[in-house]
Image (cartoon, rainbow, N blue to C red):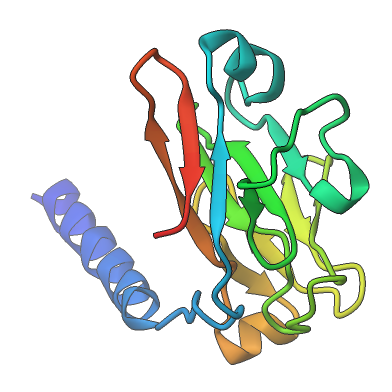
Length: 168
């Protein structure tokens, strides 16, 4: 009986700490709207330039020719500050605008810190974002205080097993 009470107490305490966090609103639309269209026309393109496996990532910034060797066409668009393409903790591809929503400038881009946490960090304001498990939610810094999350984009399947990154 004491074990059941302990379990009920633990569940109640956990629910009490999780409910306020679940109600917290994240504004992931602060970055100005910008078109996104990055098609991987063949499965081979996806194999070369896509992401493969949990916690892998790639930057798409046409002005800096990233990723190196990727063939951008005149109709392709890479958002406001570029695109961060990641495979989340389960290996599902996700895409975000690289622009820090707190700084709100296309030249101020988040960068993945390859430490034990693998967070995206703004080099100017120091805000941290969870791009692998919490869909670009702010974790710390001024963006977290304001509730500004990274803008996310849709990654859809193409007809030949490849993917396309597009605006929502």
